[in-house]
Image (cartoon, rainbow, N blue to C red; front, side, top):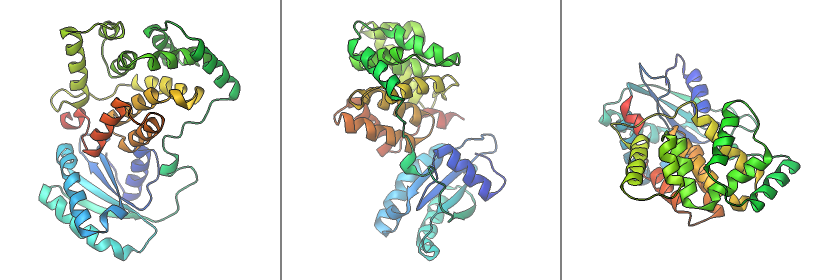
Length: 309
């Protein structure tokens, strides 16, 4: 993230997070050679107690050390008593100094958030028009023997700037709900695995080859040495999965919401990832991939590309 003024930095932070923080402290990482550094947000309520504050700052140390910013800008979003920030700011300054990270300044945003811009609105996917929902749901319930091709067809339409027909959205929903194999194939495709390798997973092959495919995908997401950033095509995958959520009954949303969470985390938006995971686990409380991603967020594990700038 690069900026010329604290206010511009706040605008960039809000664009990156996708919402206007409230009663929060934001640490924006600045790099001379990178326009979109990591942004960390913490509720001020989690920092009021000294012991809890010390624990939270310890948790923040790993992602900040990993991001290795040239400097940070601290932004407080609050409409409360600024005097209460003194102890928080003192301890935060000490934590940054211990990490050897310069601080270029602080900024306070105390104006009300515009309507529709708060975290409560983050990750809200409006329902499609009723007629589109009916057609998609009918196709989902009637679908038989759907394959990877339905997802490829939907992705191609989005990539080419076309609307996905409701029936095709229903078939995509049926496919990713069919099995973890189908969901994993969609995840592999969305995170850069070759189509040939994705087909092997979608077709149910197992063994050393598919283990290699899974390992390479995990490296792209997590490895400090070979982690890769999302590509422009990632947005098309997000659109396909968002259409599934918008057009089908909530009962079928866990796979799509979980995949959206992975892609949001991979893009560096942990707040959005957390919202998608919350929605997925409300539908399916024991959905394994969502539970694993919850652990990733809880442990503040960043995507691998953060290490490889």
